[in-house]
Length: 392
Image 1 (tube, helix red, strand yellow):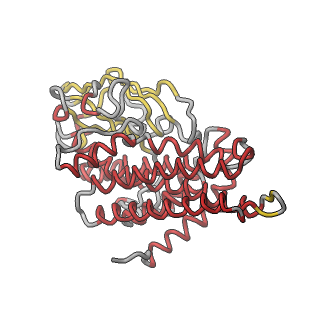
Image 2: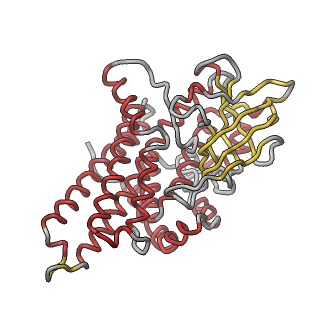
Image 3: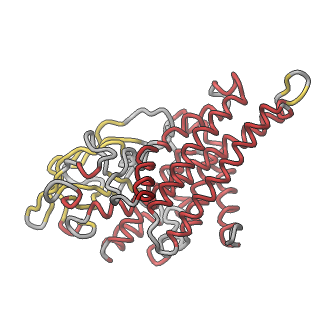
C-alpha cells in the first residue's frame, strides 16, 4: 500500500492550489453574491489541462489520472465550491461519456473543445418526475429520417445557462432502463431552449437551469453510444461523477476546517484564544479526522477506477462519507465562529450553504446507501441515478 502522492500528483496539487489561492479565492465572496463567475477562469483552467483532466492529450486534455482529477476538484472547491461544480460537470459528466462512448468524429468535434476549455458542457438527465428513479424519465426521442426529434423537459441542469454542449437522455424505446438512449445536443439546436433559472441555497456562481426540448431536431450522428444503451452510459458516467463530488465535498470541508482553525487561534474569550478550549479542540480534531478518512475513501475509489475496474461501490462510499463530512464540518465551523459564523462577512456561512448540495446531487445520501447496501447484500444492480446533476 502507498499512502503518499506521487511526484506528478504533488505537482498538480501545488499548481492548482497556487492558481486557486491567487485567482479564485479573492473573488469567492463576490462570485457568491453575484451568482456568476469570470468566464476567463474556464479558459485559464483549460490552458492548464484542467477542463479535461483525464482526457488524453490527443483530444486536448491533460492526460492525467483520476487521482489527479480528485486533487484538482478538491483544490478548486477549497477556494470556491461553485466553480468546482462547473469544472466537475465538464470533466466527468460531459468529457467522460463522449470519450468512453463517442465515435471518433464525436470526439474530434466535441471532446477536443470541451477538454481545452473552449466550450462548456452540461448533463441533462433529471426531470420533474424522474429524479433518483432516472429509469422512469419521460423525455422522448423519435427517429425521423436522418434526424432524432426530442421532446421533454430537463431540470436541475448545472451549467445549463452557459453550456455549449449538452448530454441529453431520452426514451427511444419502451418503459424502463433499456428504452433510454443518450444524445449530444448543442446550444442553438432548433427546439432547444433554456427555461427557468433556479435560485439556490448555495453554489450560487454555477447556474442551475431547466432545459426545454420542443421538437428539437438532432442529426442521427448525435446519438451517443448505441440506441437503447443510454442508461448504461448514464450509470457509468455517474460512477466517476460521484468521485468528483466527493472531491468537491472534501474541498468545502477543508475550507471550513482551515477557516475555523485560523479563527480559533485569533479569537479571544476569557483572556485566551478559543483554540485553547477543549470544546473547540475536540471539534477541530473530529473535523480533521473525518476529512482525512473521506480523502482516503476518495483516493481509493479513484485508484480503482484508474485500474479499469468497476468502482460503483467505492464511488458511492466516497461520495456518501465525504458529502456528509462536508455538511458536518461546515456546521462545526459555524459553531466555532459563533454569531459571526451566521453572517455573510465570514466565509463559513458560505461553506455551510455550499456543503448541503453535495448530499443531494449525483445521487442523494439515501441513494448512495441503497447502492452500498445492495452491493454488500449481494442484491440487484443499481438502477438509481442522480436527482441533482442531471443537475450534474
